[in-house]
Image 1 (cartoon, rainbow, N blue to C red):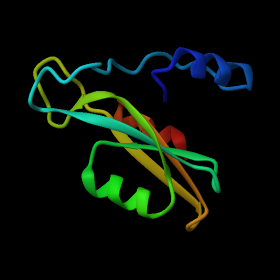
Image 2: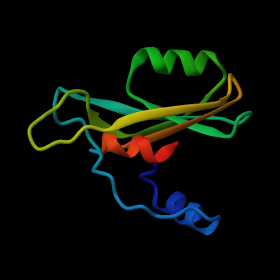
Image 3: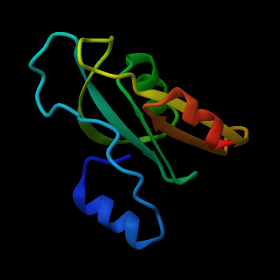
Length: 113
């Protein structure tokens, strides 16, 4: 998942498939229930992770992940006219190979196995 057009184009060039836009991310915090959505990278396992939760952020930073900056702002609770964004993870090798997925339809989790 990315909001960066160049990164999107590069991903397509190396074999990723565009499955469409899953939603909109706010560029500015114009509402009190919006929280900064940040992205992190772990080079040793070649994986990205995104979160707005302080506990997640503290953990990944203490575990050696690099802060890639913020993606935008997301609502931390259901607001009128918004839809949930689900975060899923799958562990292939504990502590080494973990994949994170972000989807807007909870039934998509069954397709990721």
